[in-house]
Amino acid sequence: MATETIDRPQTERTEENTFLHVLTGPFARILYSLPFLIFGINHFAQPQNLAPAVPVPGEMFWVYFVGACLIAAGIAIIANRLRLIAGVLLSALLMTFVLTIHVPAILAEGMAATQAVVNLLKDSALAGAALYLAGHPHR
Image (cartoon, rainbow, N blue to C red; front, top):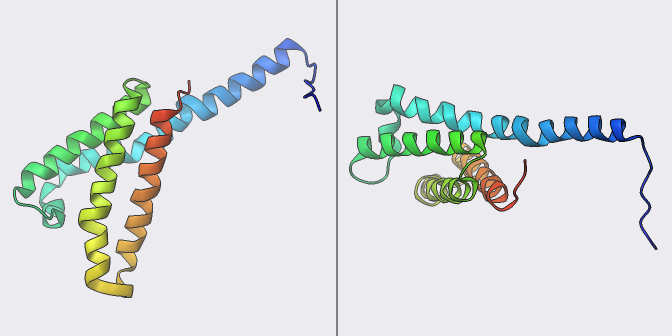
């Protein structure tokens, strides 16, 4: 069965497409990136609060490094530049958190690790979304 197209006036189609373009393009990129920018800034504003969560030596270095990575990824996604590399690296960073912070916390605390489970699910979802953005060129 052939697909039918609905004939609408060109202006209506353009207005609808413009709204969806902005909503699913620039607005979505900003909405997705803002938490990374805020988290990244927080790594520089309050590094001493984040250092105890770092599971490897050189805690302060890693806090600042991760903060810079989060800010760089947020800017790249908002600017719609270097999307592939930003998305892949952001996903790798988030999955590193899952494997080195959240999974060990769950294993150590068992079913009482509610916050660790929430963080694992959150970071996994954000990592998946980063990969999706990286692989799907979109306005």
